[in-house]
Length: 245
Image (cartoon, rainbow, N blue to C red; front, side, top):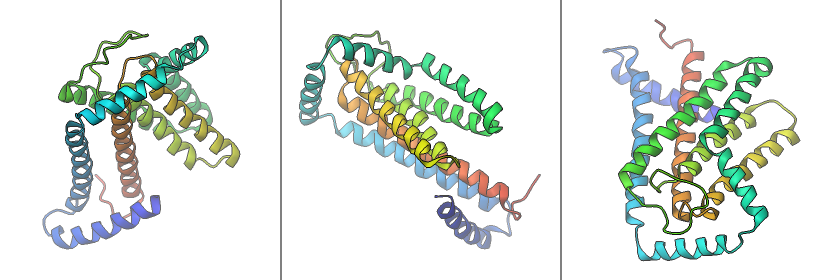
C-alpha cells in the first residue's frame, strides 16, 4: 500500500507544484492533506446519510430476526464469554491493552511512534462516535439489557472502537517483520476479537445488529483515514524535497 500511496502523492505533488509553486512552496503539501481530509469527511457524511435512509420497516425486520436468533442461543457459558469480551471492548479493557502496548513499544520495538498512532486512532474513534450518536439519536433496543448502558445506540461504540483500534493493530502487525505464522495467527485472533465484541452487544441485548454494522463501517473509515495520514507524513518526512522549518 505504501508504494501505491507514494506514487499517487508524487503525481499529485507534481501537478500541484506546477500550478501553485509561484505562490508558496509548501502549498502543494497543504492541499494534498486537505484533499485527503475532504475525502474522509465526505465518506463520513455519506455514512450518516445512508444510515438515515436505512430507518425502514425492512431494516427493523432484519434487526428483530437477527437479534432473536442470537439471543435464542444464550447459555451460561456464552454469557460469561460475551460479558468478558464486551469488557475487553470497554474503556478499562483498552486501558490495559494500551499499557501492554506501551511496554512493548518501549522495551521491544523501541518505537514510541507506534504507541502514539494507536492511541490517536482510538481517541479519534471514541470522539467521533459520541458525535455520530448525537446526530442519529437512536434509542437502545427495548429488550432486557444484560449489562448497563448509558449512551445512545447508533452506531455501536464498542463495534466502532474495536474495528478502529484492533483493525489498526492488525495493519501494524501485518507490517512487522516477524514469523509469518505468528503474524497471521495474531491477525486472525484480532479479527475474531473484533467480531466477538460486536456480537456480544447483540447477545447482551444492548444493540441492534444495524448498530454493529454502522460501528464497523465507521471504524473502518477511521482505519483507512489514519493509515493514509500516517503514510503521508512518512512519505513527506523521507522526501528530500519536502521543505523543513
